[in-house]
Length: 151
Image (cartoon, rainbow, N blue to C red; front, side, top):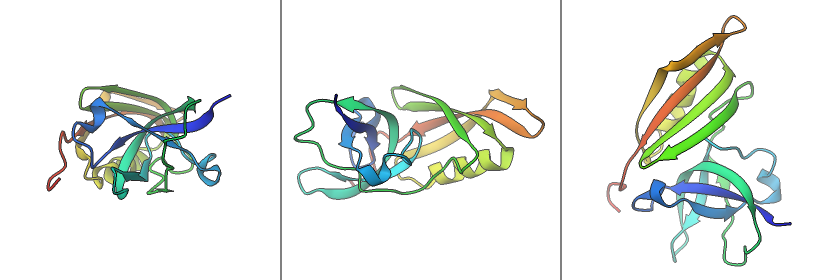
């Protein structure tokens, strides 16, 4: 059985979304780390700390050269949201959340837009539906920068 890894779109990487980087998940973050979260990771030969967005979780056998996720930068979903899917195509990432309020959706968008990796976000109203009164399923489109300014 392989070790737990996170596939991360790193802010310091040029064309970050075209090549997600694999990072080992330390035991202290194993239960908390989920796709859609921002995480601090070491990047490059100098191991400069960068932020990134976790695109997926998985397992991998050959982990000898992998670095560890350092920390979670936020928990954008909050405690009641549930990430149901993440899809990436080019520089666009689409995330779908279930069982969130509209206020939580706005908070998710605000936190995502704090990342230098994110150029802009759009709530996909066609993918936003009400369920159980005030809870919704919300689709958020995230447009990523191809390059980070100053890099």
